[in-house]
Image 1: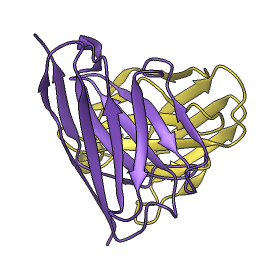
Image 2: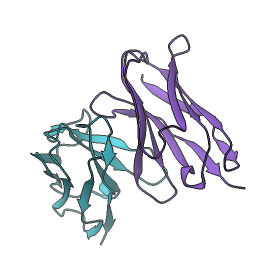
Image 3: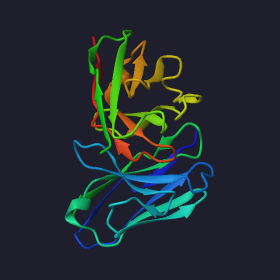
Length: 107
Length: 116
């Protein structure tokens, strides 16, 4: 199975900060990399797909980059509603896998 | 609009079986691949299984292979997960989700607790 490793596991940031989360795959996943946001008690929500494509309705302060094994999710200016847990997920192999999550907390 | 609603969760003893269902609306389950993803309490997301849009391809995570069976009923537009030989570590909130290369719609989840 392809292992997905996110860093950091958690971070504290202030409203307006630029936040970057990284995701590394144990082998190349090409650009088959998606990002999800999950708030407590809610189902995950798709943010980015194919590494750098913004899902419809998602604010443009979210962006994604990378290919192969290294990917990043960037929030250009953190907003109060962005405090949540973020997961990367690969859909390159037939057995999909998620990263362990990155919790973004209020500083 | 697209909606996914899971049902069938509950408390079950180790070694017993449980069947989850996911009712889809706003699209047909034979037009998209459909997945089950689970989340243990206060843990991360764990992909469980997928059935392709035409039902010809089915894959399972190693942790559930041989115990869980994913299926769909086109006439009822539902997705199912038959879970046999349940273990304590299968306790989780089980989500159904739609997607070929990404999971663009999710249900709210069905809670499964495996405990004696």
